[in-house]
Image (cartoon, rainbow, N blue to C red):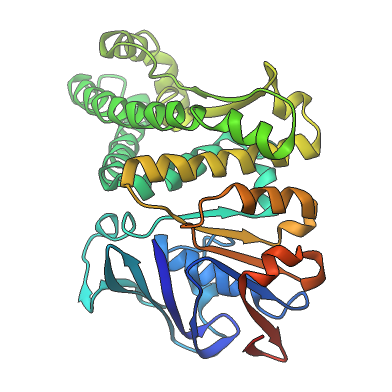
Length: 361
């Protein structure tokens, strides 16, 4: 999979640009604050229609403008033109100039793997951010996943509302709640199975990448869920805790409480790992994801290495690039071209950003 060109219109600090890319290595360099990450953010947003830096889509629109458009030609057996248009009124996506009504039908088409320093925070963040990681990565692979997840969240909201109503009205019938519980369990088990399959696939590769690039240590990921039981056992748990859920007014069990635990040599890396080991673990997770995508989709994803030189040393980045299949199109951002090994630089297409201008070197 390759992105041949990128067009931006009123995106962040860019008014109007078009860039053509190398099929292999692309380096974007310049001082802090000139817009390097904005470019790879646009590539990422072209894939999943969202930024990896903010949940507020409007922040992607250039100041003083009403909308932004991200457009790119992506080659994956065939060439297709993709567009993401974000305005204050909402968001539209197109493939070959045809509007796609469901986002789930769009985002599984362009597979991107992102490595950036802030991802280390996943170990200190709440479980919701680790679930967000799961949701984003699986959505790239399976469009049905988003449908199941959206439906689950709708039923969860309905169930929580009914629990609060039951607290106010003690005589309220439980029949409708039982229907909602059965729906929640049915949808939750589908999501559970997809998450578990994904983590099982990640564990096929993650230890290899950790050892090959970062040194010694046996790394694995454990998926923790309330739904690792039979449907009957899960429903029985809801029934036994009915009174407690009515009092608190929300569903205390379900895939909305799932979590990921990373173990290095059988120790929880969030509790025992150093900053360096935590960085290496999440990067290994993302590199393992490349193999999962290749196996699942029969194509290589696009790889973004955003400002990694501030997080890991040059030698490890060289190890990452050297170990990758030459078919993987890679984007590297850096503040200093001299930090990047000459071997990588000599094989890359290089873009310099200075004074709000992008020039190919």
